[in-house]
Image (cartoon, rainbow, N blue to C red; front, side, top):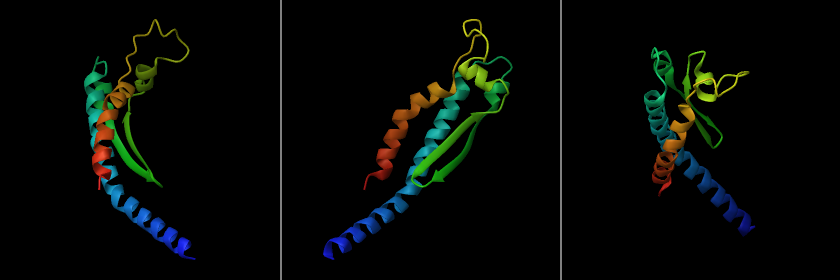
Length: 120
């Protein structure tokens, strides 16, 4: 009986810890989201500037213990610029990824912010 009571206390403490940490984790995600969007705007290929202006920070969603921060571009050709056009030779198309490299660049920043957020 004592072991079960101890386990219940641990579970309660863990739930409280996660509840207390969630706002800090969301803040780390929001800061990183802004960094990614800004970097993407500065690295995207610019012709008319429409794609650059369309890069936006989306919502931050919580699903259980998962935090998702969205950055997206609204132009029809945004994915072709990021991944290359479908159905054509990618060698003929001058596409330049801008979102994935921006995310990769700021992964260490997010990890640093996350470590700081969850530090007791």
